[in-house]
Amino acid sequence: MTTEAPLRRATTGTLDYYLLHAAAEDVQPIGLLVEEFVLADDLSATRLRSAGWTAAPVAATGHLGVEPLDGGWWSSAAFARAVRTDRQLRARLAATDRATAEATYHRLGGGALPGDEALRDHFHDDVPLASGAPLRLGTGTDVHRVLFAGELDDRRLERLSRQLRLAAPVDPPATRPGVIGTGRLRVNDTNARWDLQRVGGAWCIDVTSTPPGRDALRWLLRQLTDLARGQGLVPATIDRLG
Image (cartoon, rainbow, N blue to C red):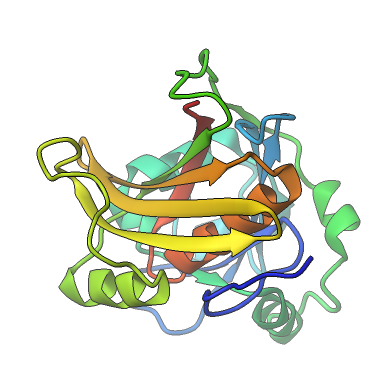
């Protein structure tokens, strides 16, 4: 795939990695969280799959709200939901890449971090994601919304805006008052634009592609989501709006 991509870095794979800390102020992590969104053919999210690993019994390092409390791998839909609703719990996570996850897992005594397929074997308690009928906004145009949990202070907002290469919003402020800025990209024959937006107290990135190109859109959604994760936002779902 040839691209004119202005994005900061490329991401491979579909798994999201987080370092897990016993407390928000701790420097050294106690484990990992690994997640993956299962996407439908239209690239909307249908399920969130999640598994955590802690090097020692959770009771010895602070209660995480998961069962069992033994060290090792565990999967908890309740924990995955809590990450997206509990600010204090979310502050104990730090998005990371596969290489750092591997090094952390090894340093904490886990050995070699399993590959993606083996990690998926630890996903036992999925979170189903509701997907309503898409809102049709026009022929030949797809709009996908990545909704995030979390907050952006001025510093993180400025950094994310720069990484997303945002310019002034395309739409008039009265039409979409929460839009911070708009980025653009052409991937093969697909023209894409994305808007960083504040909606109902949450952050989202709306991605418009014309004409819809599934491979290009999948790649772009992944890149944009990863950049937002790097600034402390946690993806909650992906909806197809039109």
